[in-house]
Length: 101
Image (spheres, rainbow, N blue to C red):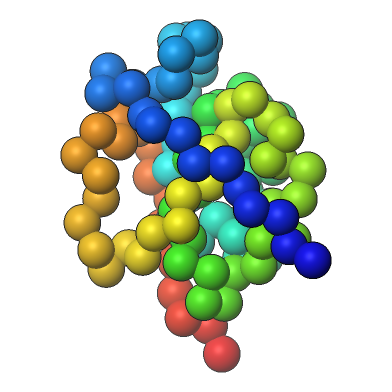
């Protein structure tokens, strides 16, 4: 059974309320895939706030298990062919989204 990841309202100034402003904020498109999820783990370990965008066509929610408890992790169900939310301020973008076979 897959878990529903939390979706939070992002602060337009970047970061969520109470977030450490010294942290870099990384967006990982395709973060629920095999490679993307491992990148997310590494970024969290390195002190980043991580925002995953994934449409879950090929990515799996179970690849993100454990990370959803981290206060600096956010997962948003979103297809990158659609425009990004305007209030999504990030420092780095990793685009690993692709329809894998």
